[in-house]
Image (spheres, rainbow, N blue to C red):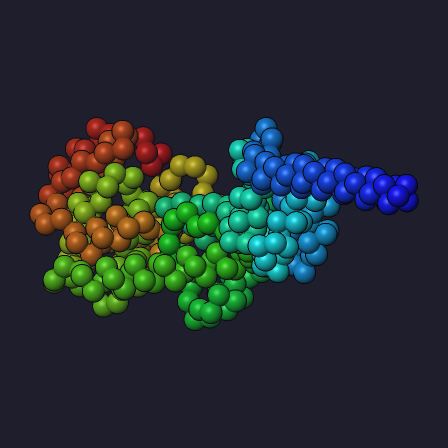
Length: 345
């Protein structure tokens, strides 16, 4: 009888122990689940954006360790658990990421899986020469430099346009790139966009223009770009230049003088500069210069293909960004005397 009672006492003790273990395990699992959910959906605690780069072929363990080392993720174990549970571990994309304050661990994983890598703006400015474009690309840190120090002809071969002169062939715009993008990649994009814009605008050009090719309109557009920054004046500048071409008159535009002088330009155009025989001196040579002199923007391209009508054949800068347009040489000379007397000392 005692044996039986003892056996019952042992059985009840084991049951109580098992019950206690089960309750403790339930509490532990519940606590872990709560901690897991809290870790997934709580902000990471960043005070400023963090930059994190995943290398190609890098393991989840290594990625997790570095996230912890850089104090981006404070619960690395839950990062790994989540990545395995939802399959993210096999879908993380390499690249450089920017993690803003307020992002959660769940959102970081989504970011890495989506491959939304950090974007850098690269701006090519209207009116820049090709040399200025190359200088700007060479000073943009995320870009890998392949064009630096190479002759222009070789660069054009690299972008797939070996028979073209580079000046004016690239569309001024802001291009977004990722770390590791090459300067040649940017040039390819800008070249394609300029060609697409020029083709579209050429197809919609005004009737009666004397241009034989879209390239000729690009050359004139580049002169218009350098002559004025005012969009409202560009069609009028275009009208003057086109009428002068039609009449066989010299274009006589200062920006072409400056471009032809290159590094020899002193900052002021002198009388001797007007007589200097460069291929771009439109005071000496008739017709258009051999190439564009800068990158024209859309307004200048459209102005070259949709010039304003009228009779003016001359214009002179007032000095405030605007111009005076004249129909005859006498009125033009008066305007020059009034606003540009000391321009060509």
